[in-house]
Image 1 (cartoon, rainbow, N blue to C red):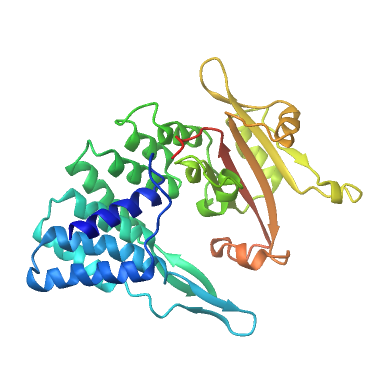
Image 2: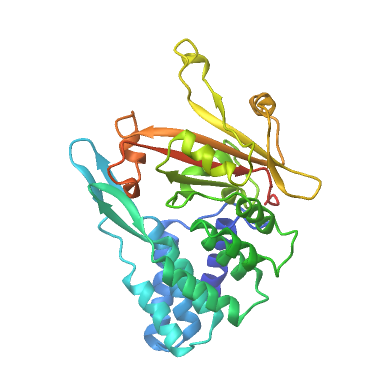
Length: 340
């Protein structure tokens, strides 16, 4: 059991890119062995709460390989039939029944729930996440062990994934006001999001991580994305309520300059003397971005998608309903997490 515990701890550190961790993901054979060892132990000691939690931890990595779908133009998408989170959910539920106030059991229950279950909607692959229960268990873990930094980090990230940045800041504040997540989410909390916006966090990962093979630990949290059913004029009007001189600066790609077709809009926020974010008054920041210079402020990028654009069916969010077009609003902060 100790060997399984060590292997899972190593994989979890690598998954979170914790400082000093190596790149490691247990292969299928190793996971099968680990699962068999824990299940054999539980046959003899079914009320071993620690072993039940360990089975749930092993299960997260087992399920990682089957939380997917095979898609083809001819046959559409079909879920991987080997996905079955039942035994692992049941193990964590039993652990919580045996030890109601075990913070570790609550934490790993939240983590497994946050991984989600694969689903097909209108023929398209997705992942269902019971966000309410994720927060129930994540909050409980923090209450029971308020000094555990990993628990607080997970709660803050879960809240941020739902667009609840003020709460995310409050969750991580007790750790340190210098913690990278505190600074990242504080930036996002300072920029209001239009009512009805649909959080689309995973679609901004490219903006945060780029082509870096070894991104900082919290790089995946530095980009956030929303879909909004507004026009550019309406979006500008929304932000002028906060910043009267706010405007979005249009950018045209070199390939489309002849047709004068706008491919995106940008705005850049920098802190003023009082530490309050203020939008740029001119487009000078764009040249700096085009040179590829690092930045330590907050960038807003806006793109328009139409229902019949190339590639739109895969990206068009169901929450936009029958709208012909929507805007994707991306925020990327220049705050960087520590390197692993």
